[in-house]
Length: 445
Image (cartoon, rainbow, N blue to C red; front, side, top):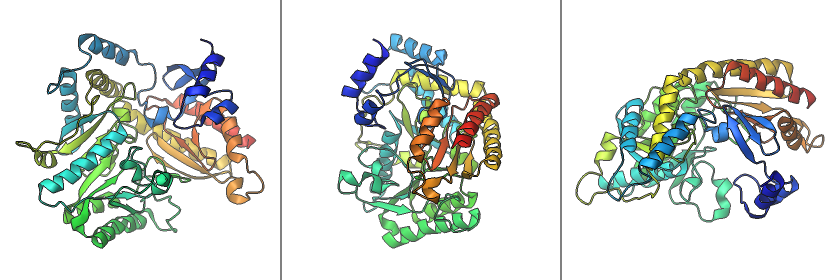
């Protein structure tokens, strides 16, 4: 079937998660990707682009790894699923591997199929843990404004309640505190350290305001992956040190969302490794399998998991595709390649090179404002006409996106910020290619 026919069918029947079908029709149908290798993707029209987002900051290994395709094929030929109350060899090997690379005693793994499910499951585990300890009143969850923890019924209310207000009454027990992003618009010229302390103290104030006997958990990304209209940057280490201490003092569980940060993206295996603290619960997805197949997991400390031991004291949840053997096999191979090719260190080194190149670019273009990030999770703000004089360039965002596409760059931008989350296998020459193309776009703008 040719490209035009495919686009026509998509425009009539496909409901995409990031673009309306009316917008797709206006653009003669959605972009259809038919081939990909490394950081490059090719569409049905024969155009090649650099995927500067790695899917959703998730294709950590890059596209087109035949080793992963092969292990999935082999596993499906061996056993495609499993009978109830049984498991499979690749899943057992995967949970052993995850336990060996996560911090502290995060040794018990509950498999799911994605990040939203992982965070939903983590919250259920946290609430159930408190019930089993005789504290049924602990049901409230603290999250930070602007964070994103998923799109399912419960977790969609975490971090960004205004974006989901159309779906009705908020999920009970949602409590919000400030994001410890040193580049936040709420940070009125304080040092990174002082702002981090303020944000941590705010968590404690909210615990006391609501009563510690009502708070089940705090959920937070080590470094926030996306903020509306803002560039993100790692908080000062004091934030996480204080947050760990606050949770311990008030009996609140600490859930660390590593769905984006995990498996090398920040230049360490996990984002929380930059801060030297141990969470009670960790959630992973995306990079654990580089999005070759659906997989996620909740990784729980022994103390939390032990609350669910014995008799009818089960964690009552069943996910049909959770722990699928083919997905487990793919994740094992994914982690093996990350280790073999030293891609965690590559993310640190190439990410620093990328950050320096972005700072060099800022010296050439007054349109660039803040630059921030860590590893291969970076971003910059644009001091564009929308923020200076709205009457000059109302179509700035559309012009920016059009020029980026023309130069072969697939980037996440709202016209006020540009975010970068490429595959962690990217090299310095490819960074230079991105910078050169971006330089041209910004010069024209």
